[in-house]
Length: 161
Image 1 (tube, one colour):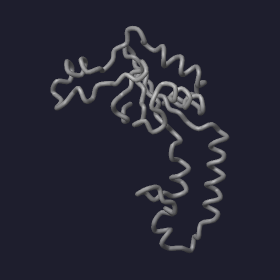
Image 2 (spheres, rainbow, N blue to C red):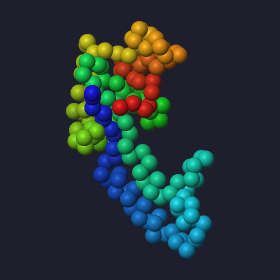
Image 3 (spheres, helix red, strand yellow):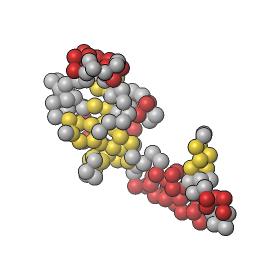
Image 4 (cartoon, rainbow, N blue to C red):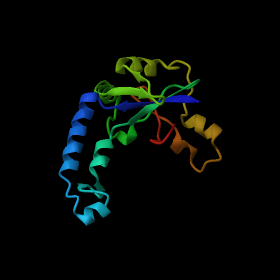
């Protein structure tokens, strides 16, 4: 059992997104049956079509990582979508707010200190040796091993809790 942590936008950034959402909704042509049938997906995003609500919620909650007893803090680099090294990670965290899975908000620097100190000297790591020893039944256990980036334990998966 552990605790997951997330990065969420600052209130002023959410307010800007809310104003954009309101403007988008007010400008919708509600007589357009095709748009209604398509759930108001009026924006192109590569291959995806997004509704104003999709745009409002997109990127609001970014999983930062997990703290678990006996383990070093495990960071989620989200396939390098928001940051790819320790410096960028810390800058990203400080630019937003941090909340745990129970809805409790932490100050960014308080979270950073906790995460960097969590079992840093004696915490377990799911490195290649650990994965080969404890998950030998898997087809390629080493491919699931944690990576180390700038001294941080980083999960190879983006979906973990």
